[in-house]
Image (cartoon, helix red, strand yellow):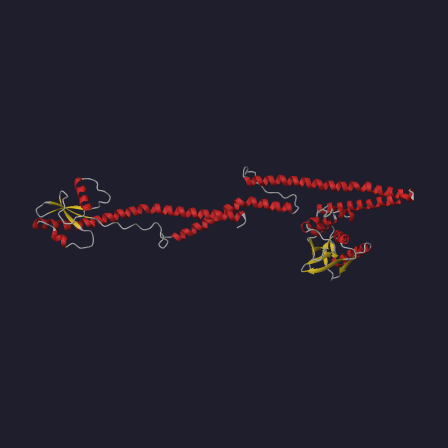
Length: 459
């Protein structure tokens, strides 16, 4: 229920079902109202017809008794206790029977006089004649009409009700699904383009329709494309500037080294210290330029020469070189050997990447400690761990150390001679080979860099 598509779909479907249920009940009620009215009228007509026929029989008998005995009391005494009770009236509406209800007498008088009776004065009146031909009125109050059936009874629904409900449910669900899918399509396209841009694909764009101008999501995609184009232009310009500057610095640096050699031959011994300092800084600058060019090459994704590499042998060579350099500062590098592992890659780039990781560990591990390198196999991957005994890295910066020119501590990095590019080169090289590289602090102090590389097929 977290995606906008699911929310739109569920809300559309729920609204459609609720509104459909309300409309159905209203329409069903409107449809039943004429039926109920017609049923009531038909029932009343039948009731009046049957009651009128009974009143004709009663009236004729009661009129004969009234003329013969002077009162219809004999007929009144033989009336059944249930059902409508008939009464005899004179032609002018005067009651001749005993115990005539007042509202019935009033209804009979209103009919005789042509006055419209009140709603509560309900009566069926028929005219009869006595044996002498004298007119009389026979009247009775009809029974109340039974209440109509409820508007909708779930236990007795209309014919095909449940089938119609299922069809409505399926059709509304399909319509809401299609509508929600179409409404959220621009959001999905925008998300895919955003993920591509975040992954480093500067050419990632959103497909927008020129016919849907004014549609907010479509306009948002167009704005995203403008932003992505601007970012791509700035990043490419930055890379071009770094690449051009690095190439341009190579020539004056080479001339500087030539001039430095000449100066050493012609200068007195008193300036040797200054010349050594110039040579040291020149070497650092040359290393920086080399790493910048390597980083630029990796950013461009240039095709590299791939070959089968014995990873254990490569790591062993890097570890031996690292141990040789570390001994000068009373540190050591130890590599735990393992069986040979072969992968497809560029040996030069992988060697430089591993050297950068090992050298970084040697720089920050404590004196008289050892940088531990282990290589093992996990499924179809080679797992390489480089662990030092240094101060580690703050947890929030563990991913930032793989960014170019990022420094955890500016003064410390400058003192150690680091350029801030080595781990960035390692990260891009490992990614280019389809692997991953992560850093984590370990218990007891120190930093561990873990590299996973896919092995060659069939290895």
